[in-house]
Image 1 (cartoon, rainbow, N blue to C red):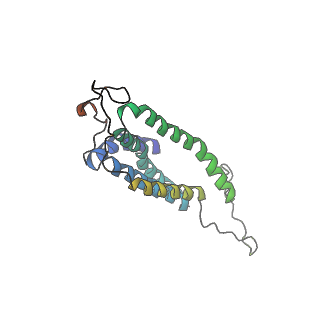
Image 2 (cartoon, helix red, strand yellow):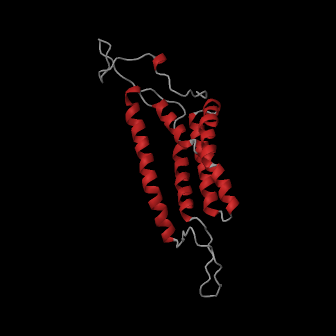
Image 3 (cartoon, rainbow, N blue to C red):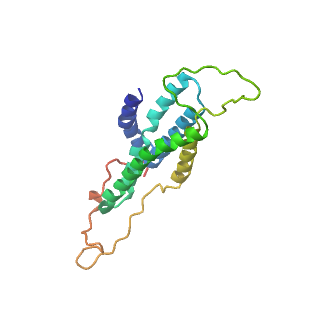
Length: 194
């Protein structure tokens, strides 16, 4: 379900949002949905809550493509590959370290993840009373991280100031490239808010 909804969000919803509210606002919206989804997973304790949070997760999947489009828009043509490679590398690092960090946080909070064993009620005695206030501590840690990302993203400039390049008498810039016209410097996804 989440995969199919993510496909719809990243194709139809993302293109509409990029045209209507712009790159930066789309990134902020995606981060907002990510924050909501992680908090929901963190505090949710019923099966229906997990399905609902999964639907919100599908909408939050617009964040990575929106960030890539925003960076593409704000980067010079000769730096596109390096910048997109850094973004993809950071995403890969997060995909690799995230599950390990989540597992460690589950371990710290004594959350058992046994898939096949049914949950049996334990007799509650005054000595062994443990009421779990937070069902999903790693998800709340993730929500706090997204909150920090939202604070950083708020300060992203709404408009890109082009870098100044000096030209020699032969019309070649300092870095040895021939300057391009503004017409050739069009981003893949247009931002209508500029």
